[in-house]
Image (tube, rainbow, N blue to C red; front, side):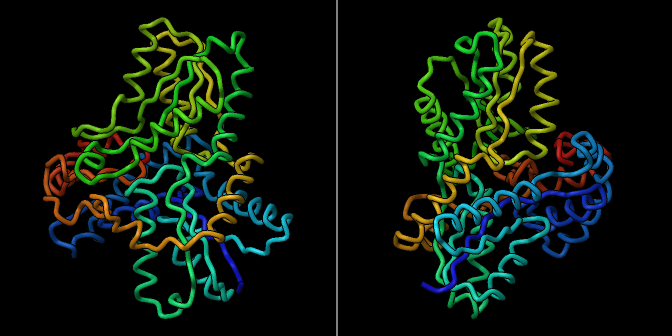
Length: 387
């Protein structure tokens, strides 16, 4: 076997306040974030939005220390994975590629080429597959493989989803059990799984398996815990007028408050690293909601980060992928089942339900809505916490 590598994929985020504006520019320059009827408008509009929204976004990041810790944590995960593989006598170089900020996927691929990697495992740090996360990154990589002659010599395999991996489930269960012990009555604590939401049309029209995998993952974690605590699954980050996956986290908190629930343990099920949606949205926004509805004892399970069981799970996923038949891009981006990896292709632009496409917490509400917001200073993008 030639030189082998692992490419860890994630979204990326601004590390300091000066990064916020260029980070937003990169996000809005992507037609998968905002689909415009005239492609030549993409970059000028991205410049305008990133300029207008910089202060709001900077304020959100100031609440969590002035920047996203995502890269630092992802690099620590990469180092821990490489060390674990080395302990097992496996010489594999681990790389990090971010979708919208440094190190970009293109930068990671450049290093992979420079190091003459001959076999590559592509591992997204999203346990559950979605066309807006893993799928988006796979599309970028697939295009690179099509256009770069050098990459045709790199044998690769994809790990599209690992929501039911036993090692991952064990790591989640361990974190939950540790946090339950912080309550006076652990058996009576209500466990609250909060997953990142997506527009419902992703599932109903584009065939995204995300909701199914989130629900299955929640059940498997509870089964692994082997506890009788009551639990709820809800979806956070809903934005805009169209329907997203339900129940919404804020609505579910109100319902639990009405049921006189006092002890609540929140589990960020779709995140493996601390970032703005755990540190700001859950820890600050949803904690405030919980207190307002009478949930007096609100705690959160930390993200997996470099938990030993999680790193062991990533190690096993890597070695198992190398032993199996390679999984190719077309098997994931164009499966036999009715799943549209790029649902925007046939969608109308404008203020329609199909016009909203989410990647992370950003939504595309159509060119008309965007122009109205830019001109008036009011509109759906003002309610997106990351901006």
